[in-house]
Length: 271
Image (cartoon, rainbow, N blue to C red; front, side, top):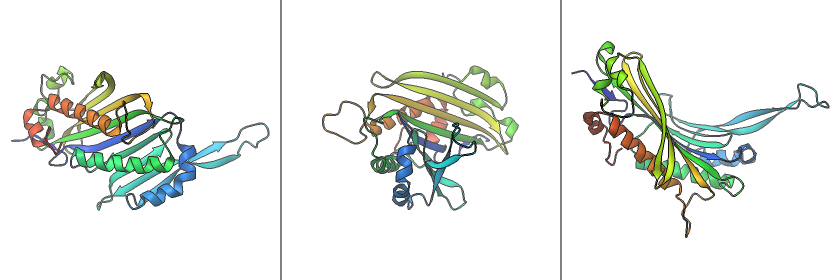
């Protein structure tokens, strides 16, 4: 019988992305430290490139075309055998982010991500009182592909009709459709997380449904340390990322059919 299948077989994750947002731009730190960053991460990310930023000088005493090139950030990738990226590591503006395009389970992804973040932050000398972390983000993109004729796919074959996360109208129409929504709710105790959700039914060679869930957690007071310290009162990176991941698990369990939840191991070690 035709139905939806998870993108990666044992899981449905197309991308998992972890991000750190700072108060100030990172280019003044990344520029002088680029060579050290490249040496540190070249084994993890064989393609480690500069992001160039042009600064134009338009003052009266300067010719209009005068400009200088600066290192604005870095973009690093690790490539699979088929030429597509398996991971990406980026630092630009006031954000450092890690993107995983091959996913097995959360514990592995979190451990790799935290290790890479800590190494990078130590080289840059952040977070600090002058440039603390103000927000932590986590994004999951899940894809489910229909294995039958594209015009036979329907939302009810993957999604629970009683779910609160999508409009009831999508159960009465054929693909394509999309639902875009956002909300706030407690994430850690009384601390609030911001959620953005895009659920999209679309077609390429097959019909598919894509679920993109972005969770942002504003850190107050701002975060100036990322590893365990004696007497700390505020949550650190691992605790926040775990809470964000759990909110994504709960969303999918509320949205997907019980059969699909079982197929991708939600709530177990592999989720």
